[in-house]
Amino acid sequence: MKTSKVGLNKVARKDGFVWQINYRLNGKRIREVVGTNKKEAHLYASKIQTDLLNNKLGIKEKEIITFDRLSSEYLQLKTNLEGSSIKKYQGFITDFKHFFSKYYPLALKDISIVSSSYISTCIEHFTKKGAKSGVIWSSASANSSKSFLASVFKYAISEKG
Image (cartoon, rainbow, N blue to C red; front, top):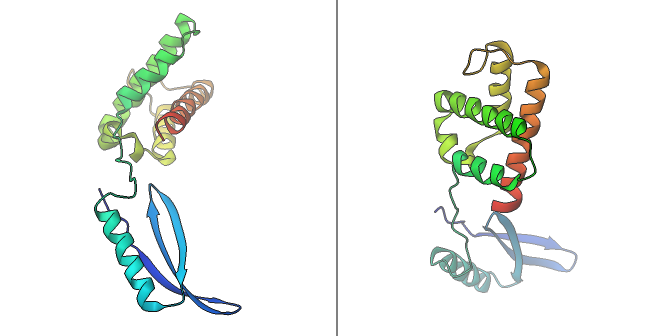
């Protein structure tokens, strides 16, 4: 895991200068004013850097989630769906996985890599050249797929962080 680097900056204030450190912890930017003495500020910054390196500040390890796992968990939550909806969503998942395995294989293994441009490219491909089955998607199918994928990834963000 990449460790954040602790930065040390001299910041102007109305009543003089102060030293401020900044670093990232679990993706969140942390800034602290550490005083007016440069030597003490360097010592404190070094202590924080050491704590980051030794994982003493509560750094969460990133959990790698595959698209298979995510889509499976999501469909299991949707207990009130009709059989036809489940079949449609499973079709979207199959087509999505087929396209991604060809063009973005690493994104299937780690959903944090997936970007909105990947999904847009995928859906554009399906509406112009067709999906795995060779059928060209209608705009209604494309919109339905976008809504479904958006809800799957919103679930991932809310539940998995």
